[in-house]
Image: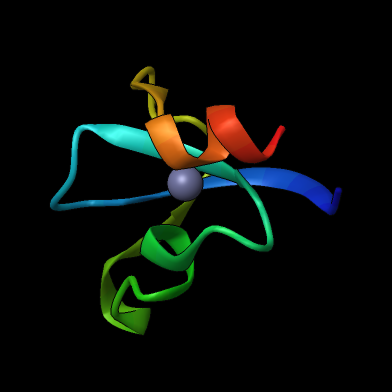
Length: 49
Ligand SMILES: [Zn+2]
């Protein structure tokens, strides 16, 4: 389990907090934002966590 500070994509409605999440890792650099953005947690991160 690899947790880090939450991040999200400006174009998606979920945030990520696990470094093993493919969706989170595939966010284009220009769209990456720090924090949860007030969004709900990504379902993959929920499974990983
Ligand atoms: Zn995720």
